[in-house]
Length: 204
Image 1: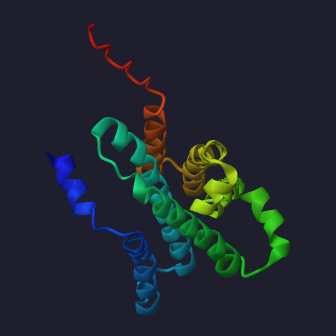
Image 2: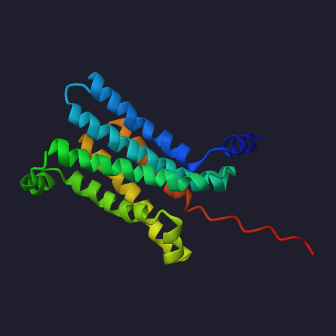
């Protein structure tokens, strides 16, 4: 079966390999910086690209549970790496805004928040991702207990919706791309609401 083939192919994959693969968009962005391939507004291009990678990784993380439940494809061991990478790119997105866009003009932050409410939405999503990244380790699971850790990581769901909304508000129009991301997020969350089939009873 295809599922078994995929499992066998992924068996040798180690966490550092996932992190290395996840670093490629950032490395390609650095190449574009030095080759001048960032268009007429390099700062906005950098800001958009790292933010979109963060959103793509959030969507990828949301795929893992439905894939396991409905397709029997178990990628659960990669979820931590995907989540951490999503947070790193979200942090880069925020950092680019503060350092390259605002250029540390802290007095302008308040005016920017009023003029651009999508920043508040995006920052709320980032704040939800922060405790998830901090607790994405075995020590945190042991310290908190599995049940409390699981409840905390439910923050992934509102964070994903806010990230999708942030993208929609950012473009100030209704192009297909941000709507596709939001549609994917809502669909993946909706799949989690489908009741599990009751186990079959074995006749006596």
